[in-house]
Image (cartoon, one colour):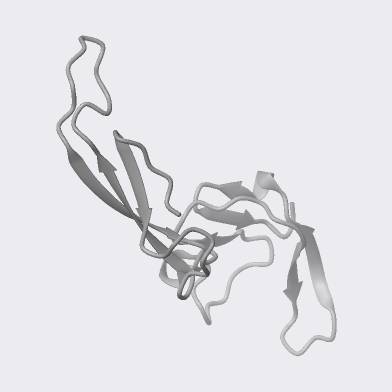
Length: 126
């Protein structure tokens, strides 16, 4: 059952608790006239608003990341991974492997200090 009252109604395209198709779920929000008022007591007009909630993880934006695929860079240069949405630190580590290597050469723990908005900046020599 969808929660609602006489002023504000939120409808999920699927009933709450039903598994979404894929990882995206659409919601429709209806504000009835008078659901909110400003500081002067003026009512709002009725309004409908739709939005989508995605449970997919962030996507890597390869074209905005550095270095470019196949490029040659110095050993101390920063690696910049750019994502399609704001990210935050999870768990684990970043591993830098030598091509053909059997183990990582550099291991950097994931931390919030590496993250700024949509970018993760890894500096191997730091």
